[in-house]
Image (cartoon, rainbow, N blue to C red; front, side):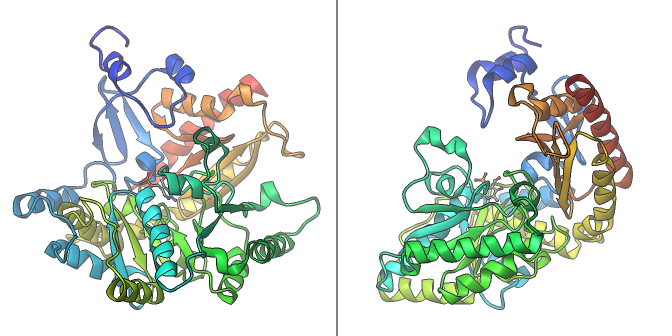
Length: 458
Ligand code: PLP
């Protein structure tokens, strides 16, 4: 509806979007959302959509969780804002730090707050740069990540991101090195087993460390399951292969758990699902169930001690955001930890529903993977992707101008399902509150959309 003064015309008149392809937008138009109910959002015309991406992977408790809303309301009444600077912070901030360390895989640790996942990654990198400089190793600045990684959009976190679209900004900055994506289905060489593939990636890491010099590298940052790169679980044994190499060279391993944290993979942290303990964790998104913008760097014991010592001995850590440790965000995050991991107000923890519905998710994905134009169904917990291919044998993609995944997502949209096209894959990452009937609705609608689009293009 583009009549003057319609919501759509007004949105397109004065707003800018993130990651929006304007020619496609001109065909499809803007959807302006007015409210939410459970895992559904409703637009200004009253159309209802099951959001199979939980917003941007974050609205894990759906859109009308009373406990989270009340936690924010109560905190707004008590102390509606404060910072965490100059030796002051709110009582909620103190409590949240204790809670995050308690639910983390670390015995001890310290937490620094940001407003987003991007800022948490920037903060982590600045912490490593600061530490190394204060400890007399100012040259240890390079950051290792992977091709297809997504770590955010600020200049540093976009440099960590391993996507070619950052070329338009002249990024990455120097010193950000991207290793091979651990996606076995796409990256393996002819005849290479999964174990051989993992050994090759481990050798590559050794070679990069030897070439660059271990003493020039500040850290290795990785998502346990890659998210915006296309919901890519790592090849079997990947973290077990890379972590000993990093340890041998004294390079910290940081898990970017912005998507995987707080239950997405069926464990509180993705690193727990994959059997490794990192040196620090980046958290955001489900940390507040999306009810407040917030991110955090959770340092494990060694990095926490080093940062604290460096700040105490040399200079303060000159970094922080006005809203770092915002009391309302902290109150919401405390409630979210309870709601997701412990069970709040007599309800079971949402992570139990994730565990119960993971088999339904797997079954649905495997069923859709039988379509001849699906090359791979990959998933972990309740995040995953269906990769479209023109030819299953050769794994050849469709011609890019067919915009297959965008067409599938648009066909889903037309029947009330939001899912995300990423490359030639369609990504699913539904809220943690989904019922079995809603899983049926999601896979049923997606199956029809896939069928109609593949009939049209294949
Ligand atoms: N890290 C990961 C793994 C993410 O998926 C994202 C966002 O999608 C970010 C960092 C950036 O978070 P934000 O968009 O809150 O800056």
